[in-house]
Image (cartoon, rainbow, N blue to C red):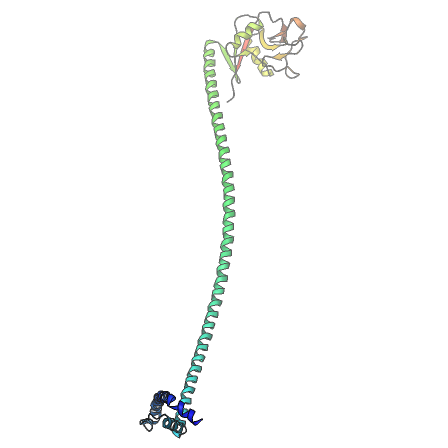
Length: 317
């Protein structure tokens, strides 16, 4: 055993010596740092390095290190380390408290802002709903206004059509008035040519010639008139006056149907006004035209010759 130990010891000795030196240097640096901290808190009592004369002998160095660890100086330095660690822990705790406080304040701030944002959002939603309702009401009003516009356009079209119709009627009335004025002019011209008389709203002309009933009527129609029509007793008295007591043809006949007396304007003689002479009419089929005398109406053959009276009515305008 001894021979073996002596054999391997010279081989490992340089390595052990190198390891011890490196460890000693590291421990010296650590101790110097502790001294520096201790000097700041306790003055310069421990400012001198313990390992000033360090020996390269590994065994002696290890013994000295073990002894130094057990000295009271090293115990004080451990307390300093504990104090430093405690201060670091306290600082870390304070940082945690500050961080927690900041987080709480931030959460409260976010919650407050979120509440305000929620209220603002609700107000905005309410405004949006109100605007939507107002928009719907406006759309309804626009629709109603569009319908009213269509109705007004239709009324305007109808009024325009009525206007055109009234203008057309007005033009027609103007034409009729012009025509009536022209007829009046012609009638007054005839009045100047013929010796006639005006009674109520008609012009009467008494002939001086003698003709049949048909020829007498043709004479009147050629001048825009017709044989006279008697509608009242006063008119009969007027005819009696202007005839001078002579018999004259009037516009009454039953030439179309025997016994059905009609005036020349197509109106049938009814049970109203009539001025028949005694026993008249009595001519049956041979006497179909009427002559007026001061004593009444008498039927004669239409081919007989008598004077006649033309009548032209004025149009009421």
